[in-house]
Image: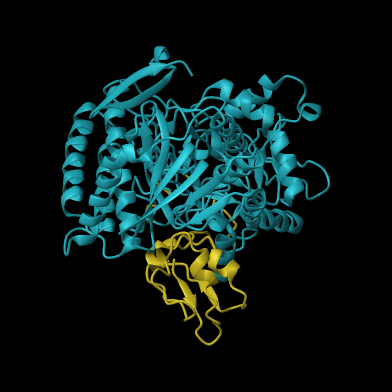
Length: 90
Length: 545
């Protein structure tokens, strides 16, 4: 779940680099815009986003494989008729 | 590589909830304290991004009989953690003091002005958990530890304990950013390295960090304690959790909804409408229900919060944020998922395991000078905070009774770790940590998974030993970061091997240890299954909790 950094907003303060326990910014150069060197190791706990002093300079992109699954309609489709035949064509 | 010597009275390995509480208490009692944390203590451990519930016993509310309170917890939150009742008694003799300390330090434990109990409970029965605003708890605890005089060393992964006779006299750490090892000389060592992630395949096989506990709690404490000769227990007993499908986040008591099947029927008998006080306890009674419904052709299973009031929706969001689920809240908002409108699919999460380090009500392990607390030994945040405190107390008392050890006696252990590091860093090709970790997860899931028998376990064990040999001789690290990951894999391989050995020895079916070749639960084995190392042998036995 990789962090995305907006280079136009980032002030290269390194707070995200320092806070990350998984160290996904490993190897970034001090006081330069951080590199996301290990994006697959992000656990989406928002430490970097919380630490960032500039709103919108860093955010987390949720990978497709972690998208929640939900049901569009709150209405449950109650089954009609005999459950053994209801899916058969007329 | 540089070798740094660090001396202290008490070394806390792991800067999570337990480690910080241990550090604060030991430092307050006058010990010189160092915390070795492999990430950043400000944002490490299971409690890093928050928590919203804390189990505590208050006699004025629960009555004078603590045993009833303990019974209730054994039906719910404590049910899956196999520990002795004496441990629970010790926890609840102290938990409320810890709650009041946290409140004093700046973690809002009664944000509404009084104790609000909710969640992890059956309707109409004793409520055991207070709601609290834990989002910034780690910031507060780190600040408090520094104020008490503890020194926090971030980016140091402790890898081996140093032992002299029957006593632990220090530990070895590896810097995960610089080419350096740290030799810690300590009169007492407290292990608080948390859970054991990345042992089994996760929610998204191949994406190992989609894990509600984070990705770097890799059983380091268990592995190093075992290698040093300390006793572990119930290593083979797996646990599972339940939560939103594909997005691994916890907080089953934070959801204000009803677990329902595809036709709208409640899965459990406990609630029929969203209830902010109770949530749906069926998720703790049977975490397997989504998986079982799927197998029976009755799936999917949803967390159905539809129909709840706007006030309840705001209440739930507030507590999700404090529970540490802000990533999930943001994701749902970004994708237009509204719990008031959309039932959210829940799934049974994959296996996790690795057992516990045996520790008593003073947090003492089987080795002198070694203590354990938190998920390493007792599980859940209240236990982590309380036994963290107790371990710091015990360790600070212990250091006044012993002389400092001579770590030079452990030169062979130091040189052996250095040689391992040199080999991992020196290889130009070979499997990296990720490849080795995936191979391990595969064998754990397939051979020590949801159904086990002797032939499967023996086959898995022999394959795991081959993997271990391959990792020992061929695994490579391109830099210090990957070196840390490789060492984590080495720990996981050790824990995995122990899971196989102890699963073979537990000749019964119990909980999620499902052995069709021994299909019954043997009441004579209502005991702790303990294991320690003697030479290269794993010595197993059974002991009263």
